[in-house]
Image 1 (cartoon, one colour):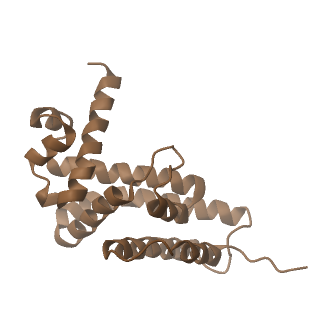
Image 2 (cartoon, rainbow, N blue to C red; image 1 turned 90 degrees about the vertical axis):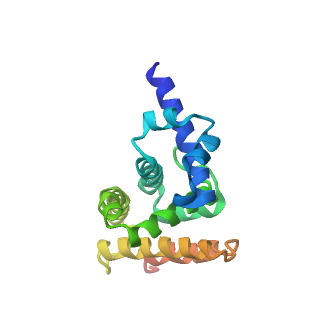
Image 3 (tube, one colour; image 1 turned 30 degrees about the horizontal axis):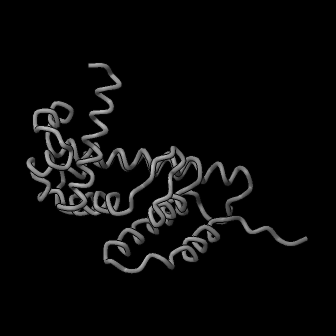
Length: 196
C-alpha cells in the first residue's frame, strides 16, 4: 500500500473513532462500535493503532495539533470561536463542536481518574500551552498585548477560559450568546493605547 493510502486509512479510522468516542464515551466505544463507526475490521483499526487507548490519544493529539495551528495563526480565543461556530480552522478543517467536545470531556475525565493517562497526556497538552505563549509573545513584541501582566499569567488565563467554555458546553448551556464574552476575553489581553 502507498503512504497516501495508509494516511487516508488512518484518517478514516480517526474520523470514525472520533464520532464513536463522542457518542459513547471511552468505555462505551467498544471494538464493535469502533468497527461500525469506521467501517473497518478490528484488524484494520489495530494495524494502525496499538490499542484503544493509543487510538484515543491519537484523536486527542490530533485535536491539539489542529488547535495549535489555529493558536499560532489567530490565537486561543479563535479556537474558542471555532468551537462555538464549527467554521473551518486555519488549515481548512472544521472543528466539529460535538465531536471535539466529546473527546475533550473524555480527556478531562481520564485526567482526573487515570494517573498513567495523565502522564502520557502532559507532553501533548504542553504543545497548546507553548503555542499560546509564543503567540502572546509575538503579540507583545508587535505592541498589541498588554504589558502590565506576565505572559505566563495571560496564557493561564486564556487556558482557564477555554476550560470554562468546555464546562459550559458540557452542561448543555446555551452557546449562542458567547461571542460578546469572547470579545471581552480578547479585549482583556489587548494593549490599550491612550488617546493622544
